[in-house]
Length: 504
Image 1 (cartoon, rainbow, N blue to C red):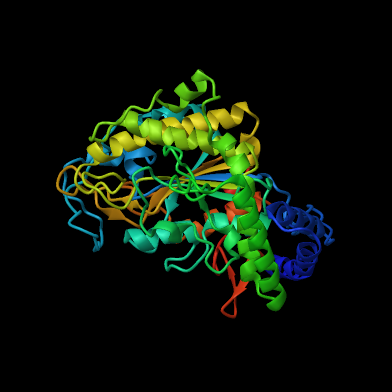
Image 2: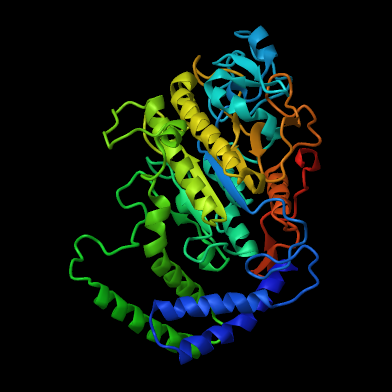
């Protein structure tokens, strides 16, 4: 299996690393050199691999169609029937008592009358895909997007449902999707993280860092958080402003003593990979001090690019009330930084929209007033996502980059309090484009209300999405494993089928 292969390779390489660390001088330059040579050693581990090897030397099981992924996660549960999944029957039956034909267990009191989409829909592209006017900027790209409308979840609780979409498990303690891809493929850039997370500018979504933690995988595969809107985008990368006593010389000497202590500790504990992971993290941090500022600096971007993403000039503070211009700037800024990271070799970028606190809603959990809450978020998301897709296409990157949009569940077709919608884990929408995805496709319809999949026997689960993305990256989801607690764990647990109908 790929997981056991990676672990065998790690055991072979570890003595090489110790030898280099022991024989060469201290400092992060030495550690970086050792890391590079260890990677070379991995690459020489020959296998019968007709599709070649990943950057970490692991054999690929499929011909890779994509090299990288950007995931757009709408925290709080975006409404499929108000954005992407057009339901004329709801317009026809608006205001009538909702009859689901079965007992419905609602999360809150969300079983009022049928509620039509808040915004009008119209068709776009040659495929004629109907989209809500609030996400109209994406209309230009529907012929390159595959919409999956029969997604189902396992819970209507935000925390567990978010974990399921982010990690493949409803319980904490499992690696994020980006961590698995980092582990399976390795990095294409020695100076930037393999997995980068751009949280919502207001705070974390449900579960916080558990959504992108490496869990039982080596810690270097955790997501690195970046806050593009902050004056210091990456926390703790540089000395704090109070540490004026830190000089380049003192920092160099600190690196040297740390390297010496690490060598001593490692030599006394053969087979313990925890320090090995920490060394890799320190190595990366040192290299990022030079590479990250350039990658995150958007000041050299042409004005037309900033305009496409909806990024405002200057640093004026936003008004207290939420508005579409603010959302376009903040989400667009993250999308532009994502493009810069992807083109510099970052393997997986995760962008979050919506946090877990604040009122009025600063997320997609629109119980009280869907138009008020979804409107600015959706407009900002659509503008930023459309700019990202167009920018990637213009630069020739879309053909091997997967853009993946998701949320933890959908919202009910009935009303809650007249203006809102309750949770709907029974069906929701994902969409994907780029990197081997067939465009102009609407796969797996929901029923006439957008309440459940039309074919209730064959829904699409997150495992199927994960399996499909891994195959496009050249990995077999059944073979990407890691031994933990006596079990060969994998991103798709014991489930998952590749959705061949959305592959180009």
